[in-house]
Length: 62
Length: 191
Image (cartoon, rainbow over all chains, first blue to last red):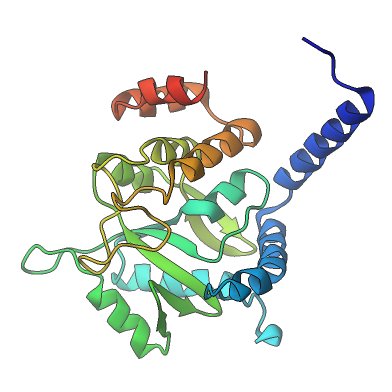
């Protein structure tokens, strides 16, 4: 089997490391990250006609 | 989400819910990297009614009285769409019973064990041991015609995520898979 191009191997290793770091975050921080993902995805999904609601985590956001 | 969990804890104390635990994508996020979801899946044991029926109606009614509105298959509780999934069948009953106690900030809650999340994902497409539908008949959003994941791909992705990122207790997982006849599927999905 061909060996992986070193540049690609570095990118994959960095991605792997980032996923490990994200997985190790405390749960509330992960939930905040999910809400950030919701904010990014919601306009795209709404444009496709999907009804989605971005979570409100703090009263100040309501 | 902390205020949402406060409400769930209060409902559990009042006996409107028998026992609850976070499941689905948010439970997977507890063990692995954050994954996009718009619903908070809550697996629940419902107290039996006098006639022996399990119904979400008393829960929805209690939530309505507190001012929480229904939206599609969810109830919006303190800004979070919550989807209640009554457990039904051996695997889900066991998963809820053995859910892990934890805290969200300072609020106590429960999350299904990672090993059970794997087992539930493996059951995709099977008729048995799946969330009971709706108040009595409506199918929860995100679950397929048989009540499992909307697609086999989603189930595979959940297994992959947990296998690669969660700390799985391999002995416990093996016991769960054996107990629920899922070892063959595990081998098939994880060659």
